[in-house]
Image (cartoon, rainbow, N blue to C red):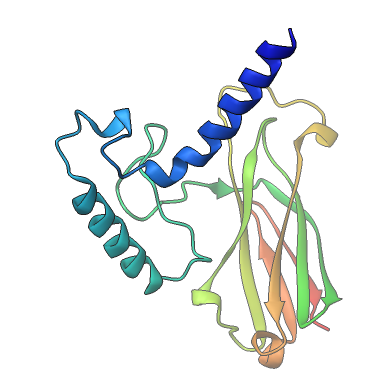
Length: 179
């Protein structure tokens, strides 16, 4: 038992050192690849140089079988049935707009505050539309189960010319005073 344990430990320690041999001819994974170690090393170094010019904090957009690859994502939300409340609360560096609404049916998701007029205030009023992806095959249900919320952050520079914030739904709108 002792010999087996020692042999297993030595093998494990030896395998951890194999990462330095990933480009060598001694690595069995490279025997049938058709690419030489020097070529792999050069392509890896070129990839590192190319990555140095990009921002590492912005994630790469990867292809997925679950997403459409049409480039820009198109949000297909529709207006929430009624907006029940809007508030503008101070936050560090700006304010947070919180909107609550009632959807027509249960199951609304991906709720967003979509800016109107390209996000610019008109006569001191900043207007948003409360939208969500809403299923049409669900039952209506009680109001508590249809309540949805969304929020958006606005910097103090954006709020400089804003006196009030209005959120529009399908049947009504609510307004809150900007602080």
